[in-house]
Image (tube, rainbow, N blue to C red; front, side, top):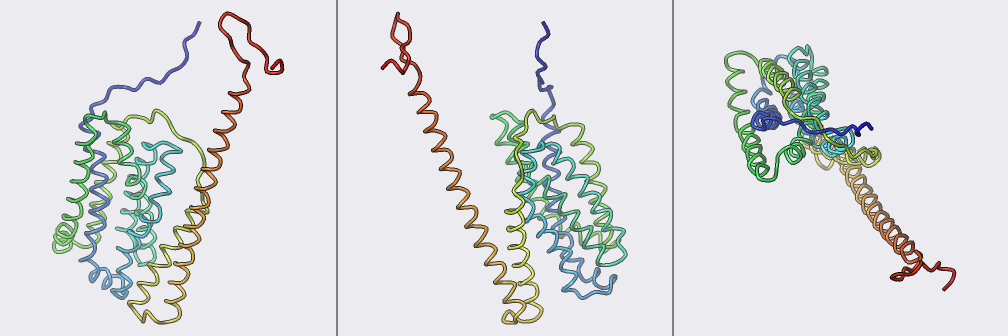
Length: 292
């Protein structure tokens, strides 16, 4: 008789796994901070206003903020390791495209891809640590990742300024692409496979509502800073953001109530099914419920 096919987790050295996951957190925060001082150089080279060059930073952070809940859900559905590692390669590809971009449109487009990749591994790195590391090592691993996050935020401006002074602003993207590619390969080799996935489906309506609310708010703040916060387009953007956020909150609250009602109905059905089972008496046959 053949035994069932059971996946047994292979033993892995957790120290390299911990470093690889933390390096991803370091890269995303490094990329967020190393271009603030490069905006003047970018605007000069691409012949755009500095206010437009600011979107090199803003659009990256906006994409991450919008997609973090989506990528977290995808990690539950498809596997955290798969989403995490694919995000590292997408980040590397986006950085490479930014380094080669000949104009602002392509630069911002590849910066969006970079933000998508960063959101994929940012949304799953903590969950990976929780699922891979045993309880006695989990707190230390999470603390180390927080250290890498802070280090990336602090190192970004200094490293970015050094590379701009001696090379160019494109060299920042070259560095990010190279390091992210290496980290992606190491993550593929070292992080153990997911033992289980949750399945289910992604609520695209709620994700779109959250994206619209946050994007409209960012656009309103940017346009208001350039013109006036009392101008009609800015006020309309603020109204769109507030309205979408209110609809998103109402939909979330309604969905929560429906879920609670469903759980109550399911519990009541189980209780009713248990009450309708035949009565058992010690040493005697069960009495069918119809005989009572």
